[in-house]
Image (cartoon, rainbow, N blue to C red; front, side, top):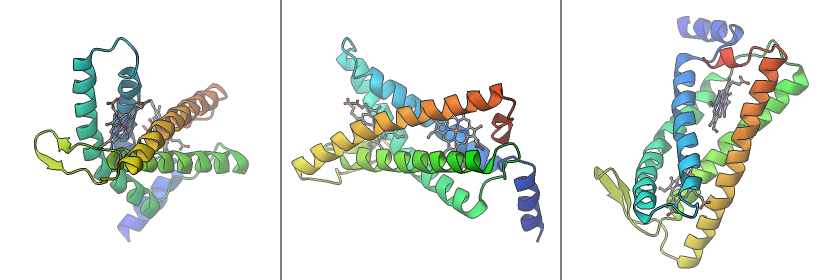
Length: 179
Ligand code: HEM
Ligand code: HEM
């Protein structure tokens, strides 16, 4: 009863729960780091040593991130989102659709990243997984999917940030929902 009441208050306070906020910011850090550093190491002039260091670190970090992402999606499905009191129905629907697309893209990026691995997936020397796919043409297909969806995700994140800036400029307090 107390939890149901607390959830109802939270939805109308226009703020995500503390768990949702912590999961959002932890995910944002991991995803922005993996995106920026992932693209950076594909630039000409990056030394082989730096490439290897970042690629190994990112494989471990993003593999560890998978259970947190599942937790975030389940938490979101169970707890919902606070109602918007500053957006029109159309804008609220658009925000919802873009958020769903972001969740789907992160899911496909994680899935394709795991399945494109042709070497062991080493997680900080704590545990390692054998490659999940053996067939070379499937591995290449997942590599192309990873490259393509990481670009789409980067574009989606830019859109997410531009939308936030636009709302802040016109006086819609959206950022406070997540802090
Ligand atoms: C949050 C999820 C992830 C993001 C945002 C991300 C981002 C990226 C980006 C931007 C690249 C460079 C793409 C390009 O070549 O243009 C990349 C490459 C790569 N990713 Fe991911 N990735 C994620 C998850 C994963 C996972 C789960 C794995 C495997 C466990 C993985 C393994 C790799 C590998 C091996 C490369 C190639 C690195 C190299 O050039 O040698 N990624 N990733
Ligand atoms: C500095 C970077 C970021 C800022 C300032 C930021 C800010 C916010 C804010 C204020 C919201 C609430 C929006 C609303 O209620 O309509 C939100 C939601 C969301 N953000 Fe971010 N974000 C950032 C990075 C990211 C990144 C990298 C991702 C990765 C995909 C992401 C994915 C999402 C998703 C999926 C939601 C919807 C939450 C839900 O309803 O479940 N954000 N973000």
